Length: 94
Image 1: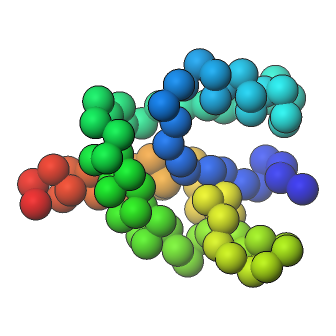
Image 2: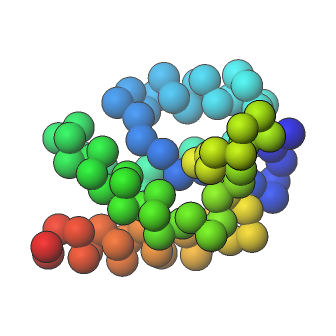
């Protein structure tokens, strides 16, 4: 069960649709914040791989098979957002 102790970092090709889906699943008390916008889907996927590695210590294992999910805990929303922006700066400068 996901509650206010969890945040999720991920990508979406249609932000409005994703926002609607999350509100349908989790209710209106969802904060859906866009941090970095990409025009190129392949570049967005490469960046997401960097994020998954960086946030590995915070990612929650699946109860089904133990694989790490995009859901995270023990990190604040503001800290995750700040880290994403810093990682992005390094990513575009590589």
